[in-house]
Image (tube, rainbow, N blue to C red; front, side, top):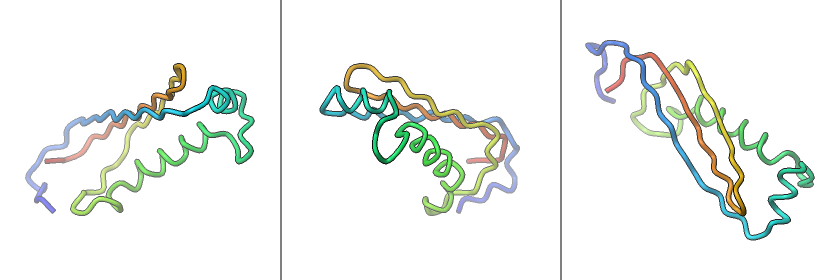
Length: 95
């Protein structure tokens, strides 16, 4: 890992986006109506996203564990696409 001991804590933020394309309007309708047999797709994805944010340093070698000050996961459905946006903020020493 990089030595961050001499660094000063600063506000850091990151935004990641993904687009999920589905092949059927029926799929979008089931997601919107929360009728997917295995449960609420967007809420399950939100929980998975929060877990990933908290465990990033466990999954990426040489990544310092960072205290998470704020996380927001947003979804926007347009046609057959779901735009997923994750925003994370921290105040810490980073390289």
